[in-house]
Image (cartoon, helix red, strand yellow):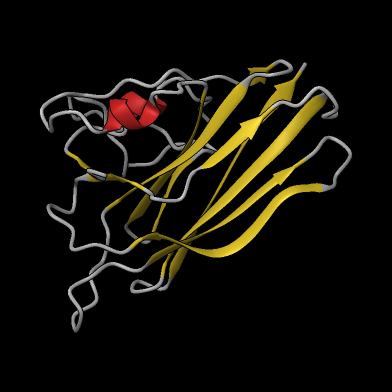
Length: 180
């Protein structure tokens, strides 16, 4: 999988709701984009969470580096529908000995009744030799959610904590979707 893309993360997450101002993320013209619960930076590490219905998300990502992938976003799914929870990171720090990054992720998907659908800790998300620090990378850990007929209706909470073990920093991200 070609995880490296030289495109602005703003194109992926531009339609997420805005909560506070930050200077890490920029649109294609270089203008700063405010942070959201699903797109943040901390101590130089940028991370973004995207929920998409795009079954072809891998093909969209694996296009030529000069092509900007465009992902649909959604916050709703009906019985039989499928969602993909993707995590993007930028400005990776490299271990001076190995020359590699060490990014792990904690994932939680919580049903409307408060019980866990997914709860995973320290999943390997990105261990690579990165290029330019401004490049955006797609984590190799993605969650596929299929709305089964018996799944509880209502708001499902999604939490991803991206951890850069080299930098010793974590970026918590949150989003949600509705099963109707």
